[in-house]
Length: 158
Image (tube, rainbow, N blue to C red; front, side, top):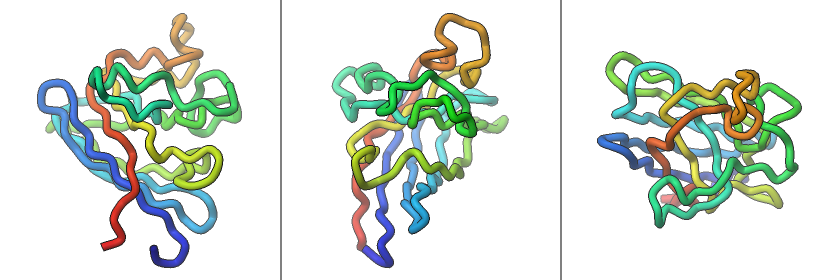
């Protein structure tokens, strides 16, 4: 792999016609850049998280909880108190397509807290970023059902 960057990919599938692909590149400074496109979503905000397990034997429901190696409460990507996998929301336009471009320091593709082999999950509802006051705000952001997901795997260098 060129210049020390690690690359990964996740193919998103899910409810009805939710489909997409996401590309992950770990930059030399340690941040990981997630880019891609997901279609088939309802217009508006959708919670977007890395979940602990790369298990889709029961669809997106078997991907486990949010990736949280440091045992923190749920929060926004900019918060100190957040799960490593808390990536906030993506926005689907009126056409149901979300263009994704997120950079984050807590989702490395190598090392002790690598997200390789885990799952990325798109939720039906907005993530309240831990501030909604609902009983699920501190654990899931009350983001609702899992409408799409994919396992994060190493990308070919070809």
